[in-house]
Every structure is written in C-alpha cells, then in structure tokens.
Length: 392
Image (tube, rainbow, N blue to C red; front, side):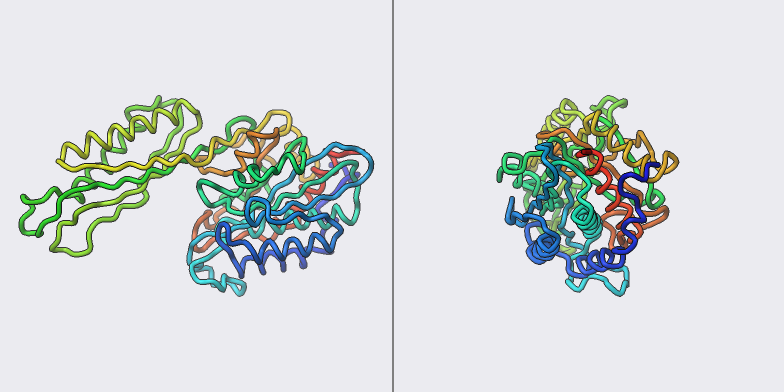
C-alpha cells in the first residue's frame, strides 16, 4: 500500500468534525428537492476551504471546483444529499428532529465523506488539474431526479469531467470493505400505477357489483407469472406489488382499487418485454372480471453501467488504500436502482459500494444508521482517487 498519496490516518485529526457534520445532517433531514439547509451547510464549508461553489444546479444541487497545477484534466465525484419519508426508530441521540423524515439510506454519510475529501484536498492540493465535487439533490425521487435535472441544467458543459465517480454504503457487508463490478451493476427501475374501475355495491349484495378488490387481489397473483413465465430464467427481473388500496368499510364494496408496482431489470430488451406483458396482462385479467383498468407506466432510472477502465482504476485505489483482502473485485449485481446511472450515460466512470457493517439494518429501514467509521475511510478513498487520477 503506497504512502505517497492519502491514507485513512491522514484524516484522523478531522474525524470528529466530519462525524459532527454527518450527525447534524442526520438530525435535520430534508426530502428530495427540499435540501435547502443541507446545501447551504455544504456550500458554506466548501467556500471556507477555498472552493468556487456554484449553487442551484438542477434544484438544490451544487458543484464545488478546486484547481491545482496547470493541467486541464478534470474529474467529478458525486455525493447525494436527500432523505426519505420514513419515521426514524433508532433512538439515537442525534435522531431526526423532523417527523416523517429520515436519512435511512446514508446520504448524510455520503455527503460527509465527500466533504472530508474536500477538506483534505484543500489542505494538501496534491494533484494537477480540476476537481469538481458534485453534491446532488433528489436521488430518491424515482423519476425526474436530481441527476437528470443537473444534467439538463448543463452540468457537464459547465463543469467538464473526464470521468465521474460515486459511492454508496452497503449494509450486510463488513465496514470498510469496498465492492466493485464493471458493466451492468444496478437495475433499471420502473413504477406502474394501476387503477381498477369496478362497480360498488352493498357487501350483502356482491352479485350487483363488479368487485375491484377481488379483481385486484387476483391480479396481484397473476402478475407473479410475468417474470416466472415470460422472462428467460437466465436473466434478472423483479415485479413487486408494493401498494394496494381499496375501500374504507367492511360492509361496502368499493367503486375502485389502486395498486402500484416496482419493476426491475438489467437489460433493455427485458425492460421492454416487462412493460409489454404487464400492460397486456392487466387489461385482459381485469376484463375477465368485468372491470376496467387504467395503467400509468413510469420509466425510472436506467441500468447503471460501470465502464471497464474506470472501474479497474477505482478498484486499484481501494487496493492501495486498504489492501486486497478488503475489496470484493466482482460483486454480484444489485436489484436496487440509482440515478447515478444518468451520469454514467454521459461520462465514463464507476459507482462502487462500501460495507456499512455485517448484521446492520438494511437501507430504507427505520432502524438504519450510517456507520461513522466509514466517514474517514470514504474521505481518504476519494482524496486518494482524485490525487491518483490527477497525478502530477
């Protein structure tokens, strides 16, 4: 492990400060497109460390730029800032003070890691080129997300990047273990909203109704055949019915029922087939009960595809920093989705994972918390990656 570039111990003197920032953000979560206070905190810190900060990119997004040397070579590193609409149940001293809002995905930690790298890079300036640190809003939006909006707002035209990198924590894997995968790594995610239109009636006279609840219940089971009987078993796909609502009283058959689906895939042809079969199945199945259906199919994030060269480079940085025994060089594809995929459609790069602790609560869980031991690990990783990418 080379000591010429940043090591984790180089940030020991600022760990308490960075953990304090992380916990402050955790205590004051803001949902997608509401990240006003978080963005202001981040911008103030960055400006204090000598960065040129451009605000309000794609909403509350900001880019902090630092130059050193004479090279025009450039790199982008991204952290997300938004929280989730979840009631926190951790009981921590720094638990969310905002009812129904929680950093249950670790974006508070991602922001703190990148701020740590920003601080270290400003102190050492051991690089030759241009660093663009991207603090992104609305990763959790699902569609019309922060990455899309920042790109539409001219992100890469205004802040050229030869490559771009991002990182997400990963509960279930030991803290500080780095995970990589070249090629398709995280799934495309689409949302389907279905409204089943029936005919209401008294519960004692079901023969006078077209029961949307019974229809919806049957449809839930029928949708399980889309993957099982339409998708090649060697391909990956998921269809999950995550929401079903109908009626308000035991003695009333309602007029309609609504349901929402999450659909995941890793290949465009599989994605297209899933939409085709879901639309066809919904209409034919519902008609069999005498009901009608309205289907809204919303395309979400695309497949996240890491480029080969940049993934190999990112992997090498981890080996230098923590050793080969603390990396997983070819991690399994993840059915979760990530709007960093839009950045990778524009520029080569790598999105990687870092373990958040074996046996820890999973992401989007009311008991989740980011592991503070990762703050300096991640900060050192980003610092070293920038130093090596822009090596003088």
